[in-house]
Image (cartoon, rainbow, N blue to C red; front, side, top):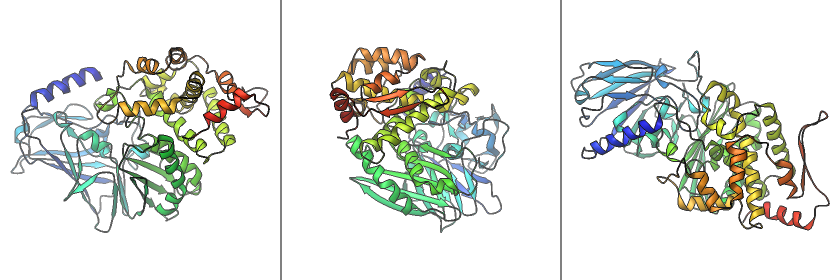
Length: 507
């Protein structure tokens, strides 16, 4: 699957290195009278290579862990030469078109329906990872609109938006002339766009420029109120990580009275995209901050720390990384822990959150390991169990942190290991999919191998009682009609109090 596709791509890159770089410039147009359709045109400024016969729409996208098959939404697909004459093509599959004479291609154009209001029989796309189009706004996830030539995934891309002149446009992409520019197709997909009647607020967290764009249909919430609520979390994130690995970051919020379900958020390297209701969710700013803390922490995992399977994403066929526990579980742990350690969340609230995660884990299939949740995430059964990556995954990360602190006499927990990994890896420098566990053990302790084998690769019960006892916190499993609970011991011993204090620090 992925390895074969990646090898083919690398070989093609080697073959094509002598060719001139081709900028893939697209126009996305919104037209009156077509409320649910975008009009997309790719105009080429030079000839394609004769090998560039396959034009692909995404079957999935990074961080969604679901089958999307964007080709389902494509209509009126046309391939034209420089005189506007149609060229022959075959539709090989729902997502792939084969073009007969690529060297003659000047233009590709098609109509593509938004995902929110288009009914599909299976695999509905998460709202925050799809597209929406109304008279006063457009939400654009580039993979949901833009197809690409397989041979040109690593070429630069440009997006021109033809929308009402008075619309505000929010995106992490930088604009050059008429076009918003991306280095590659992967970079483009990593950069959602929100356009329309938006509010904007911004701030500086040290040297990182943070922008918040908000669409709220009935103006229930605006960017300034969101920024005021999130400012403490952003500062706590910087304190936890010691620095923010980004010069700028963009939050895109979309509020509707009754948005498609499920509502939530989707992370990107330099931005994140949110869909919430204007009802209870818009009033729960604390809840929004917690979600935003999770998505913002994704600037660490997987957006700076990830394996080659994420670095070179396979848009043709899902090929999941086994390290989903790290991408989502560690992120969920980090987003809660940074709030706890900066005083933005009480210990009681933190432990209640852990209790809820234990309870959800108890409702799900215990036979699934964290590795299973990762490698089977795209299957129907995997989707039913997927929420546990945020529960058992976060619990496992928290226990790993406690174990590391215990072994190092409080000197080095999971946070410190992450900072060391950030110094070694980052954008363009993925870690090894196969060797990452070995690397974690080598940079920590032999005991961590047992933890990985038992609680990530296997499905052995998490040692909640044993590990939290080291902090002077008592864990009681569910029973006698009571949910699982954590209690802070009033008479903890000196060693427990010392480790607990270190565990809650924020250096």
